Length: 578
Image (cartoon, rainbow, N blue to C red; front, side, top):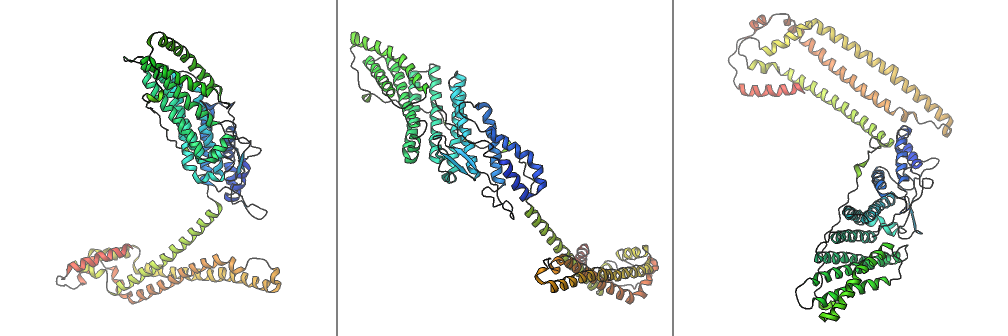
């Protein structure tokens, strides 16, 4: 069995994420964020360095988790930042993270792809993850039955990775023309190669467990069919076929060898099955299957392609099992049975049986914490603050309108004798409780005298506020603007300072808001003053008790339409809450 070859990259001297990420974060997020994230950036670079491995020395057991973690970081970085030409200069900041990623094609080591697109890094790491799984599977397949079981699962998982790249890389990988290995057709081929080898593990387990010859034959034919699919996939695309033929290893010849080899295994075990049948001509049929298997093994031994040594050793091992039995069967048939030896084509073909399927792969994006999740670009933060300020301005404006409308509503209600008139509609004699509560509240704070004192104090504060606004704020801004205008007129284009009106824009807006508040306060004070003068005589009645006030009220008949009055009271309560 064979693994997918690992892609090779270059060390941190040629591919360094640290400096590029450092510059981008400083320009886009600020120096504070740059300092905070430097430890995380260096850790990501260390993971990348640990993924720069080769087929001869790598330990798949330790390399696979590191590749999964680095892949999670790469997918996080792809989502978080823009990658490409930074556009950074003396007077401009980096708009993208600029890193030249470089990867060698796994079929042809002379072909090197380089790109600033982080997708190349993502697909390459993902490809190597699948290759490492297949390498681990190859090593396990050469051990015991438990090793074969684990190898079978790993080949299926590896196939899932290549299938994922084939399905999801799609159009994105086309741009990387010097890396044919990560292209769609290549990954489809490798996914099927892994599946063929998973089926081969299944067949080998059946052989080791000495299962029935019929089952072994069917599993072997199923394996052969998988390898035939691999050959068909290579031949389907001229570009992939040519690329593999020029590569360091001829995968097509490898698949052809294995396709024929497993047909030979199937024929060998079919010879064992027919030998046990209680019918005429079984010796001749056994010899036919043995001779076919022997002929196939001899033909693939003549291949001129240099393939991995294990293929030769397995083929020779099968010949050593087959040859003595074929020689013995030929002698017995010639001396005793004299059964005719039929052609293979005249006998019933062996039905293939396939017991494996790809295990779906999903990148483990939750393998690492996102160190950049709370970072907000400076421009975005600035815009957010501007929006917040605008919203606060809108809120203040609405509050002013609401207060003004409330004052108008209360004035109209007062002119109609509301809400006291409605309260009285529910009481036919005496002073209504709701009215007395208002009277009691006024008496509690000091009565009419205290109301006059409070009004005078508020009026004084209002006038003082206007004086401060006009003499200390508006006057200062006007003086500054006047000086700026004089200097600008005198110096012309030599005066490069930002225009005073632009600098004062925010302050002038705040002055307008304050002026509106004070104007509204003056208008409200005028209304209060007028009301207090008009009702001054009547308000002296507040000093009387509830019973005294009730005695002075005239008796009235029961008010009709109480239902309408109650509904109006509900509306007034709602208005009061507003």
